[in-house]
Image (cartoon, rainbow, N blue to C red):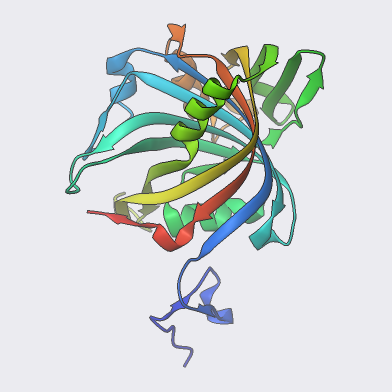
Length: 266
């Protein structure tokens, strides 16, 4: 009989075997991130935040990322559009401040599966364009089945001053990324086999920081064009963009995912 060991890490299908030990830290050696932050409606955003968390501010962070030199994927690249909200986890002592992951789109299946199963990051698939730099502008967008649902435009791009870069480094050097891992129960009746809060810390070591003006446009597709994601995009589009929070940030960095520090929050 094939027995799974408690001191091994497995991914489905687990019966083919796992590896000794648990999650480890892994490095993304060449990451370019483009981040927009904006104020939104407090009540509308709070409705998306689960029990145990509280908003630190009514704010959305949309981060597009091009990941290269991905250590655990033998250098294979992939792109991301992640949507986060600033939260405090109140059930821990002391409380934990960080960013709650509302949704993450990725353009490769390989990073989606362990992100969902191991750490509960709500990853789903879309096509995500390479960053298009031209002069002092940059554009990228996410689309599915030919329909663009998130368009990001960065303009007036400039190098950060020494003080501005220091502020960015202080904010992003360590990042508590939190999420909710939900595994539905099979069969009739609904419910969950697993439903729990998680923590997946990250670290960023910047090599270049630029600042910019930026805009984010959400476009909800009709149901038949994106039946699994349309309700997610519609909810994000319904969150009003009240005003930007500081300048947009374009950062070249080494990104270290601290799988060794990932844990359940309870």
